[in-house]
Amino acid sequence: MMRRAGRPGLIGMAARTAVVAGTATAVSGSVARHQQNKANEQYQEEAYAAQQQQAAMDAAAAQAVANAQAAAPAPAAAPAGDDMMTKLQQLATLHSQGILSDEEFAAAKAKLLS
Image (cartoon, rainbow, N blue to C red; front, side, top):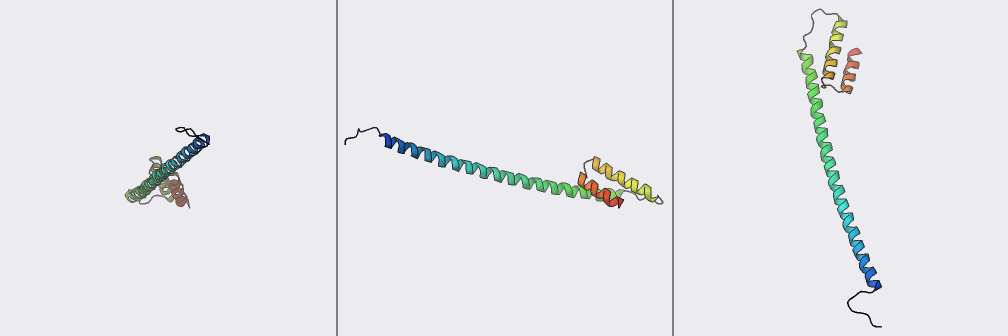
């Protein structure tokens, strides 16, 4: 059986197509994995930075509360109700300024009222 030279037959073209398709699939899978790994690394870095920023903000808020409590002059003979109102107002001011988060405000208020 004689074959024509120069052009592949039907089986040769099918084999070539399979090789090209397999190579393309492998390359695209590798690129997709690389992009996914890069996105995961970026997400981890951003999460770590956000965690560090939140920790710094929490420390600053705690320091601000401590400074506000230390700087507030204690009334000499104020009734207990007025003192509690003053402290509640201070907490509300810190909360409205954004120094205290909602959770921190609620916890401080509950501690003060108990």
